[in-house]
Length: 209
Image (tube, rainbow, N blue to C red):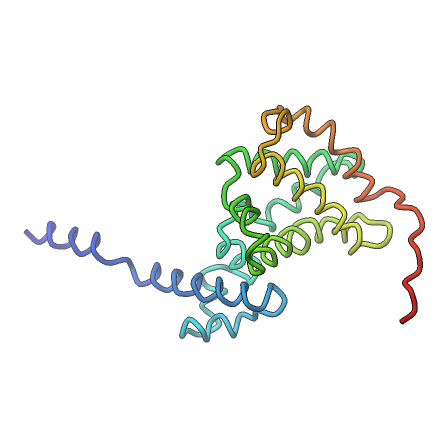
C-alpha cells in the first residue's frame, strides 16, 4: 500500500529540481526571444522565473548552456567547438559540414530545422538561430582561426551552414536532400574553407553618410 502510494505520487508530481529547470527554461525562452543572446542576462532570466541567479549556474552551468537547452538544439558548443578545432586547420570546413550533417540527420533535422522553418515569420526564431550559429558555434571557431575580418567570416560561413540546412531539410531539394555525407562535404567544404581561413579579397570602403 505504501509503496503503491509513493509510486503514484512520483508519477503525479515532478521532482522539485525538474520544476526549477522547467521554470528557468520557460523564462529563458522568453528572454532570449525578446532580447537576443547578448541582451538576455542571467539575472533577468532568474527574476522572470522567480529564482536566485545562482540557480542558472547550478542547473545549467552557464548562459550558453541555458540558451542551447532553451531552444532545444542537441549540440553543446562547449563540446563541439573544441572538436572542430582539434584537427588540421585546412580540414576545418570538412569537420564543420560533417558535424552539422551528423547532428541533423540523427533526427531528420530536429529543433534547428524547426527554427529554420520559423525564421521567415518569427523574428525571435530568426534571432535565436542566427545567434546560435554565429556566436556560439561558428563565431567561436572563426575567432580562433581567422586571419582577419572574423565577424564577416562568421557571417559568410553561416550562409553555407544555414543554407545547407534549409535546402536539405526544409526545402528538401534533390539530389542534395538525399546525398550522402561524403558528397555533400566534398561539394560545400572548399567554399566554406575559403570563408573561414582563405583570401576574401578586398572589400569596398563604406560610403560616407
